[in-house]
Length: 399
Image (spheres, rainbow, N blue to C red):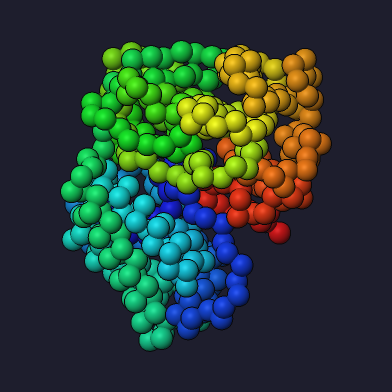
């Protein structure tokens, strides 16, 4: 519900484009806001805990809109503050980001009248935890920023409401266990669900209400309207473990609207280098199908990474695609004791087969893999603005 929130999801979340090169002097409001953020960053957990406590004490009816456990929500809030501050002078990027959040927040039941309460709690939290930088100038800057942020989200939600449901109920019609902790889950939404290959949806299960996680579509749009997701059960992963170990055919889950910018530019003649680790291979498969559907013979190079051979759970279907499409090359990369494909790590394999300056990059998988693969592709000749992924964290390693 919160007006400034990062994503709902786990690894691939509401894609914010990579920061553009800073060539202009930041606005006075941007300078002030970043000073405030720098002061509260060391106590981020305390700030967000205080924010939510104040929000719920003053507005107890809002509590039911949030999941019972708030740890992940706290992290997303502060991440979104950093994102909004980073792009505060980049109107196009910030507007796209906030419009996506506004549309996505409809599934929580967020309404325009909720935003002032959030803004008030935010201002009190900043005043309490940023005493050195807070004052009339900072308060005015934050009020202006929050007003613009909330109005952008409200407007996007209102426009979306005219043509799109807040969520889709979807029946599970297929549940195939590929490994002990990976399942392919296929659902039939109650209404047509429009999306593009490479995007993702947020999912809510009946076992963990109000807890949403992102999963990428594992195919390009199908004529029968079915949607497939590759889900890996992770430790303490409420949603993932429920989908892998508990879900059965006939169960009904809920889908939020599609999101993500990792889609194919079909006007380009450049090839695609696609790097997927673990279940991050799901959207890569959708992209390959999308290229095949458009009928253009663009070279596509797929690197499928896994820790061990058994984790190459979808390799056979990729090899079948490779046999049918001469423009497609599939290279499995196994980190330990490989008997299929290459042995080693994905970024090193990507460098080994470069250079890639005539290709666009597509990355999906764990955050560390994405960080290192971005570095590998840049070192192999692909400009950063031609590398697509939906990881919203920082690409700069800490320290």
